Length: 340
Image (cartoon, rainbow, N blue to C red; front, side):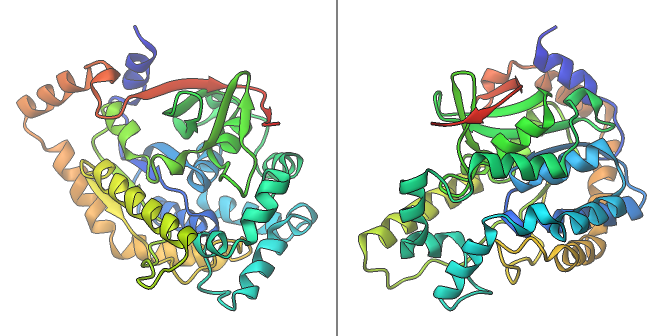
């Protein structure tokens, strides 16, 4: 039995929904409220696949499935010494230089050149040791096999230019690789392979769950959807808009087969302000509570599908992973180091 077939077997028959938690920096804290509302509604979570911030939230929940404890854990972290000595203060200060603190986003900082200078000089805004210290403070030293709920985390393999899904090995390393936003966090090395943030190839990782035969899949998109400026004049601004346009189209294609995608209203949240735990979680909770009927309808449609249709779905799910539109590599990850 292949590794993919084993994963398919692991998910088959698990009740509830499969969550695909997208990246969005601090806006991803809304995932806590989304999970909390689903938990309060009594709906089981069958598995979680996360990228970037979604991988961090997903990892902590799958290790200890209690959304209230998850919120308290983040509150304790952002009020502690490790977070408050990090480089996020510089990023927030740079936003203020643009006089757009509440509306600031990563693309504006890149266009302004604030991040380009530091990233070119030092490789990233946040050094490897600092990122590792933060992840160590947040995530216990556990492996994927230690989770109570099946967990998957995505990243981008720069060597092979491929999407990678981690399902074994060290969770801390997987979260670091999945969250390595180019220019902000350092690229992560595991042996000869270099990884960066999974969201740069797949912002809301629905496709890995669909590839494993999951049916009741809910994607949660907390990314920045700020409209592009129509009066861009500089070459850098035009380059960034071109990137955003292509990335937006890629995301549309990737989510085309998603049974359900949620877009909680997180735009007012600052992407670099991780202290907004309660505000972000409350937004996620309220949105999920208002739309919980969509999840119930999705589960009902899957469970009440005619027998023949279910058998056809099962046969399709047994196809080799290479038949997927964008091949996915399923891997483990162990001790990592910075790209030098």
